[in-house]
Amino acid sequence: PMLIRRPVITSAVIAQSTIHPCAENTITMTITTNVPLVVGVGHTITVSGLRGFKEGVPVPMAGPPTGNITVANTDAIFDSRGTWDLEHGILIVTLVQDSTAGFGHVFSVDLTNPASQQDCAQVTLNISTFCFNNTFSFTTPNVSNGDAKLSNQGSCGNFSSSLLSPGTPPTSFA
Image: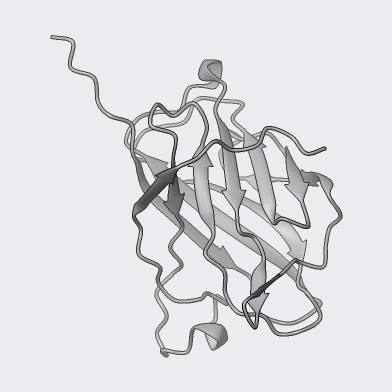
């Protein structure tokens, strides 16, 4: 009796729709947990690092501006409006319906690519009030031709998925 499963993000996958400068780029994220996320707990999903790097310096997306952003999601467990911070590349999405454990929940946002080339960034996911409150690295889809920047999904290769140091996500932007 009294066995309680430790909550774990079992998978976090991110993909983009295009690698072209100045283009609207749909960023699609799929997250899977080993336990349900429960709306009454007040879970928020924070995605950080939605920007690239050029010569080691962060490069923000070209848009949309900081503020509310439309969030599309296939099973309506996330709010259709998220909070977006353009300068820091942070997206915050609120849970509005209980999730299903072991199921990949998909959501996406449309961002605008910058005008110049940029290198890939490590994008991380944090679920607030998820007991251990650790940050998890997204992975990208497999690349078949070995050149991540030219793959049909516009991915940046595979990142290793491992738990990183604990962090507390922001709840809003000033």
